[in-house]
Image 1 (cartoon, helix red, strand yellow):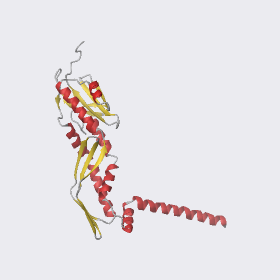
Image 2 (cartoon, helix red, strand yellow):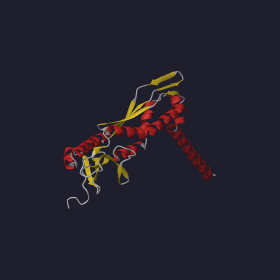
Image 3 (cartoon, helix red, strand yellow):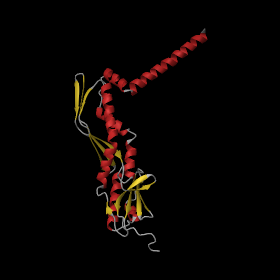
Length: 261
């Protein structure tokens, strides 16, 4: 009889633990549970903080940015050379021998910013939809304005600029949010692109750049120049601190096979 009673108590304890655990998960993880907590406690919900958190924790954004950088600032370059399954965009090119190359992308920084904006737009929109669900679960009425999203590459950061006019109300309380906000991602992309521009300008004016001189000027950046049999050069620039890479292809002052033999 005692053994049966102990078994019943043990079963009751296990069931209680499972129920308590499920309640904790429901109220701390689900939007509906969080909404109920907000209503009971009267806690205010910060929509912009929630949106920033969603963008910062989106696992698809950083890989997309990395892919763009490693392909010369273009997610899908049309004129490229393959290197380790990456399409290295020709940023300076001539199909002639002995001639200096012609710039193919005169505004590399601006092009890269536009590519980042276009390739991460869906992730930002997904976070906006998630915010709508959170507000609805918490019992808010919401009115969203037009999303205005762009990306900026500045020293030490890639900035995701998000403009999202928003008004919310619940009960007698209402708030308006009009000020754009930004999500900053630590990055050496700006330095990598500026050095790439210097190399490209040298290639367009004189021909093959002296990477030793560039590495002496920028010791925090690794620079590799891999010469190809067709006269192209693959430039691989990487940050020693963040391991980010910006890569591109150049064909300038190329010599025909057998030249100099």
